[in-house]
Image (cartoon, rainbow, N blue to C red; front, top):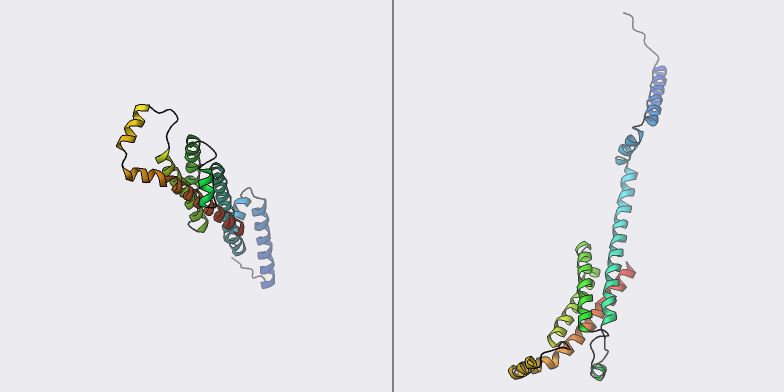
Length: 201
């Protein structure tokens, strides 16, 4: 058997032609898309591009979620009355623009929506502000419920409550509305804080 030795330049040219043919076949092959994806996975530029874009997408998603939570909290803010001074509260002596039952129903809906959002948001100042705002409205509703009396109440029940009430109960009933008003102010404070943090992100 006779072996024919080719000049190195010829070998290189043949090798180049072979690589070109193989590259062309891969490009035209139905599997070329899969091949390109595999190549991009190992491409340093593509990896650096992914590292840049994915965090930005996550931040945008978090901003959208936080904005949704703020929008839900504003429903409660619109229901509640926020007073700037003790004298202003005592002059009006109202806790909200809506009846207690309406506020409680809205609070349940808003709480469910925001708690689902908080489960997805990362820990941070925005999540902290949203959580504190919601907690303030929930605490305010808790104290409002303590003093709330439905319009239709059995007269004998009222007599019983009055006869069994002790001085400490009277003091509690007198201060509870102030506690509600304070919680409303706290809820608004944290809500404004969340809005500012979202805008500066």
